[in-house]
Amino acid sequence: MSGQGFNSVTAKKFAVATFLNGDYSRAAPVVSSFYKIVDMQKHPREDAVRFLISESSIYDTFPKLLRELAKVGMIATAKRARYESRLMPTLSSSTLTVENGVVVTVSKLMRARPRNRYLAYLPAMLFAATLAVVFIDGMYRADSDFARVFIRDPFLLAAVYTMSLMGILGVHEMGHMIANKWHGIRTSWPYFIPFIPGFFIPTLGALIVTRSNMTNRNVLFDVGISGPIAGLIVTMIVSVYGSYTSILIPAEEAEDLLEGLQLMPLNSSILMMATHYLAGNGDANGDAVLVMSPVLFAAWVGFFITFLNLMPAAQLDGGHILRATLGIRWHRILTYSSVGVLAGLGYFVMAFLVLLIASRAPESTPLDDVSPLSKKRRALFWVAMALAVLCAPLPAQPFRPLF
Image (tube, rainbow, N blue to C red; front, top):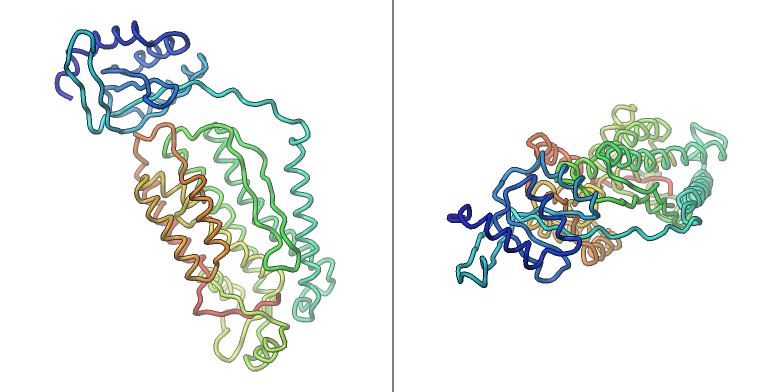
């Protein structure tokens, strides 16, 4: 970037006089009040203006820039990118080329579409529908002597199962909402997704729609990791209680029930097996099989959802924290690796869904993509990846849950 300081002021004034008119004429003074502008140009493909700035550290100042730009109806992104332009083209033939400069791109804020007032009730309706579907699924799973060993009343057992599963999902989403609120990110209420009662799982979880952009990598990381961690804490509690309400039966009896389709094998995870020891049911081996109660099955779903969400792929929570930690290149590589892992574990539908999401919305990019992730969060990323492994269902360890 040698020689940039000599031409920066002249180039800036010339650029303002030639193409910064209308709304964008207000952007340059705002940007120049925070950073030293080396050069500026129209975006070659978008309705936006690019500013090459001399500063390399913008973590503290960029949120303030966003607030000031919002006052004039604009928003900005910051990335390290190749910048090339001709300085004062009518007066000089010199060019400016920077391979890894800090480029601030300013564009107009899109006006929010008027919201349909009926859609405001959609989260509540979906929650009620999912609650009903999960309860019906609980009644189906309670229809067994194995299920009613500790809770005799099928209605009460279904209610406990519903509270357990919906509690896991609800706390997961609440973790995201609290993190978003903490960082000033506007979001919708959770949209729960009901599925088919009596099938593999009665709900496909929930999702939250963000209505503002992630400011920087730290914010993207915090929002991504908060849900799985919050949900996992509740899952561990439910798993201990669910294990306590489950029973051990001889392996020979389990084999007979499996042949009669009264039980169905299900793979467990390392963390789930650890909760069995806490509940005193850790003695399941080749001579005994633990038959899951409906509550323990709710915990299994919780572990599976945590594993799935922490997968470093696409728009999953793990994909967000991976993007914040290691950047675009590794995000792309590990997305396709995660698809392979899911397919290898036999979850072909999930693998296809992740691949579909990756093709439609490959990543989440923070507005400030220049400032690095904090060191503590970098360390926490590896903890999250370890938790994904610990929550993953292990093919080598079959369980025989009531299904």
